[in-house]
Image (cartoon, rainbow, N blue to C red; front, side, top):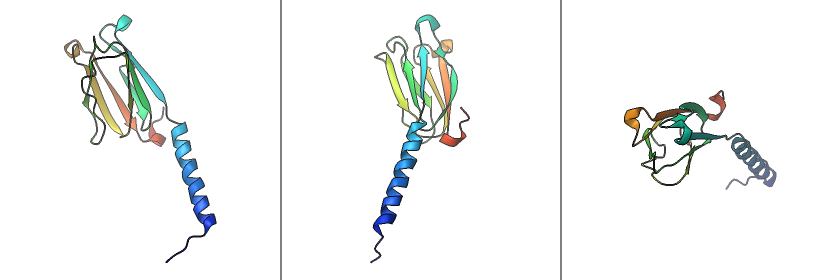
Length: 123
């Protein structure tokens, strides 16, 4: 049986901690507002984010229910959020996402974001 020296285990542990902490430190919180003075619209309508970022939709979901209509394979779904004033979504998969207000999609109340791997977002 191979025995790994304690110093090697400590170095690997410290390195893993630094990598995880560095990645988390660069996550960004993006806020998308809707309704109110915006009427049937989202602001911004589109944005670029990194995997690990959090998107927060802020508005009245009873008036503007939210559904994610397109997402990359493996991404978490958002299906008809229809209550509350805020919803958070942590992006875990790179790719293109689209969302809509279920009541006002015919009036064009849609939005999109593109998620890039953390080093490639160019934000």
